[in-house]
Image (cartoon, rainbow, N blue to C red; front, top):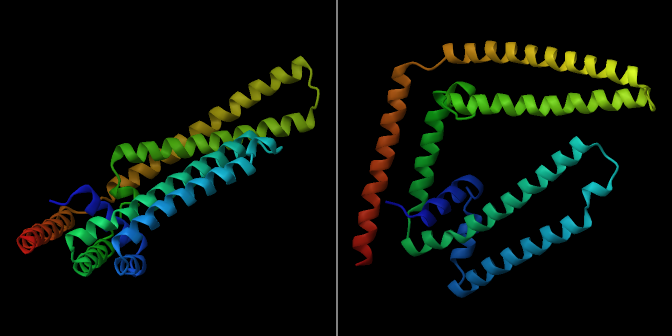
Length: 234
């Protein structure tokens, strides 16, 4: 069985470092230099992100609240990617210490991706997603569109009526409620139709069986490889 460090290192290698540039470059230098590089990278990313966050104060700009929330969310995403970037590189040490056959792993990944592409088994396709993930995706898109529509309607109203009377404001609330209900109803109809066509276009059982067989063969190859490494160490 692979440990967590090996799994993360292989994931990083096969996802972001397919050319093995970083992997081979770091492997050629001594261990203490590598650890110094890991620590320096972590500290540099931390101070860079902290400094940028202090300089770019999104709330100080006169932009819509929806855009501010979106930019803040993007900022959190950048921080998360920085953490993943650092963790992925640091886990190369597990591959170095275990003398893992990286070339064989990348070849298996290439064959697996080719198989998935030929049979259209990509996880990003709606028909390959679990129903809960699809529902979550639909709800997220609805929230995004709802906030966008709300921001447009409110800004348009106050641009037309800078100082609205009570009657105009109440009428706007009724119209706003009607528009949101119509939007939600149309969105639900579209989602139901889309999900219906997604479910009827599920892949046949034969393709699923082929995928399961391919994955089992890949796991068997990994299990065969690890005992060999253990015997080599002893």
